[in-house]
Image 1: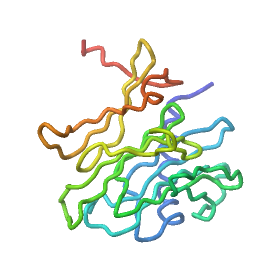
Image 2: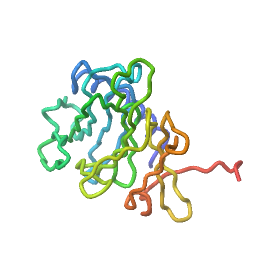
Image 3: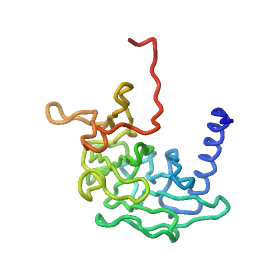
Length: 228
């Protein structure tokens, strides 16, 4: 019998273990994980771990090269490094090597991941922030992007082979899914820290038709009955 409470506790413990293991084994010391990994299970039962690096304590000042990782952990006793993952940084690349345990996407130009990714309908939604040239400290001027990619291959889902689009200025929030309880369709929303009156908005709604207009599968949502 499925015990939801025990399953949630299990996920919390797994998250803690994964955070420690990732921070010591996968990436270079200059980078760091400051967000909670997101988990998914594929059709074969393998656990996937999704997480990006980026210094939330110094979003504009860090010079580290940051990366987003998707790790297929089919053997909990093994330790993985980047050599076990497929590099899909090229915009024309996607993961197709079955011997690899996932993939990674290298950011460039001080771009970094400062929020948890979202997985829904076999896609992973990632937000990133690229500081403006010359910015440092708490200065949040810069570019916010939203990535929409296949959760197994890393292939682009924004358009034909396109992974990301600029969604505003400043630091982007974690993506949030809003499900229509009647139709099952959903929208993805992201907020940004900066806005210019008349030309920009704090909240961005994903416009990818395949992402927002198809019924969700096994989507869990809640509704506060006090709010009518």
